[in-house]
Length: 256
View 1 (cartoon, rainbow, N blue to C red):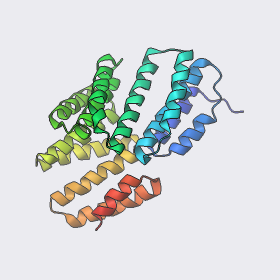
View 2: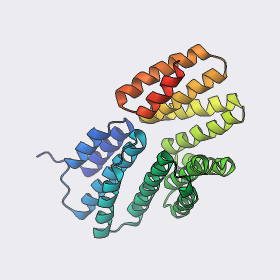
View 3: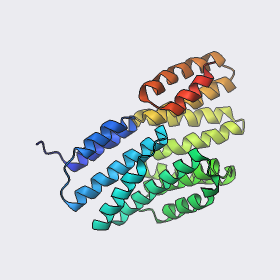
View 4: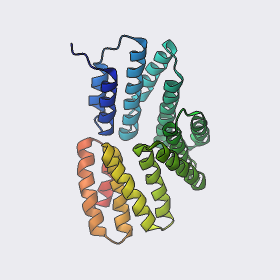
């Protein structure tokens, strides 16, 4: 048996998740022998993060069991910060389910949960992530673009305070969408390109592909239809190999 520091295992699983290797991340964590309650809780949190992330990317439903296991681990060894992380994962899971099922009536309660998490977050990175989800839910479930814009702007500020590339990239992606809708293509390009670069920097495969889909949209809006189709074709190949069906579908429509 090989002994490895738990922090190294969790870091590796997190990087695999960003790379879209959810199955490998899960296998690594499930092969990890955790004996102490703190280690059990750490592995449970990491497994829940993998499952919730995969559920959003692939529209699967593996998160519920992992979140339940995390809840049991927290009962054995409570921790305020881990409980906050678990609550954010519950929010993300609820948002995914509502978004994909069209359950827009859940929007107000989910936004309220996100705002509470933002207010009680133990640091700016976590507060920024909660503010981002408040914006995404307001945007996509409530069609409240003004409220969403305020939350995205706050998320960007908090992400920059924390120097967290993921939070910054999420905020810029959606702020760029607002700029595009308003007809400001120059601002949209600046925000979308920076978001893409940050996602590439941290190895976020799904995030990078999703950003490149938006750059396809932007190229078409700028009049470069050939460039848009060429980029869509490449992203389509990547999405197919990575097993991300919703990006495959989006890009297939752009290749025509």
